[in-house]
Image 1 (cartoon, one colour):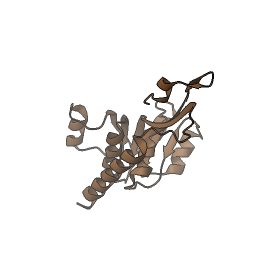
Image 2 (image 1 turned 30 degrees about the vertical axis):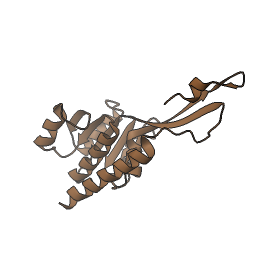
Image 3 (image 1 turned 90 degrees about the vertical axis):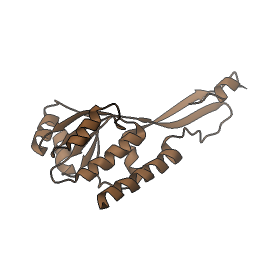
Length: 185
């Protein structure tokens, strides 16, 4: 019940962060002749549940991915329950799971080293961040989120979104263009 309550509190925090920060496109510059909009879009993430990590951490991250509607692939050292696997394959799943692999930490690292798999984002649940960094050999194209799992939506949703800045010139020869100024992003 303690782990369930933590995941529930985390999901509520995710919703608050989504409503206040991540689902809102903002134009902080408020220029009359230009739009500079900052927004967040879902991005694929690989969730790695390492040996010795709690499955509740994975469930917490799945709740965050579901809130953002980000696709995830799962690499886990611990077999997942049949209920979760059935849910992922059903049309009722709240989260888009593209694959589930059960593999040891050593096999996971071997796959990364061989370039058999090279995700652009990894949320490491348990395990050694320094060992993963060594396996990735400092690859700048891979972002690793390796901190402890928290109940803070503002922190955890960052792994599942990418920030996008959109600039639009909203004038023609210095004359404001009402169509560009009212464009919804």
